[in-house]
Length: 157
Image (cartoon, rainbow, N blue to C red; front, top):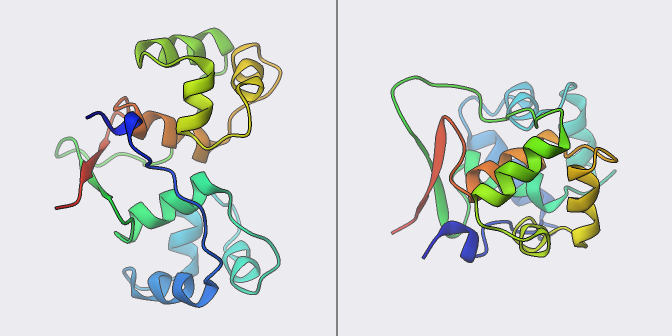
């Protein structure tokens, strides 16, 4: 079964202490490393999240879970020896976003479901240049549909 047919995107369960523990156990535990890996320009965002000032959207939390190898069902695997960025900028043109969705064989509704977005209207907005997907959202799309140039999702044993 393809990754997009399974639930890859997971929601934050509210356990900020578990998040903090995973972050600290990841490499040096440095907030800057996690902030950079999640596409945040300021490491203080990690502290603000850990202090309960905001919650993570499901795509960002899923990336964190994959980075820290704490996702319940999947792990990140490098495609090749070259080690590229995890976060990938979405194409600037909506038509290119639409081509990627169609290449994956997804309808707008299925893509919204796969990414845990509220409605297919968001996908339509992405494809009609009315709204841009976040780095995290686009990266999750590429991972789930096996179109990421540097990483792929592997089921955990």
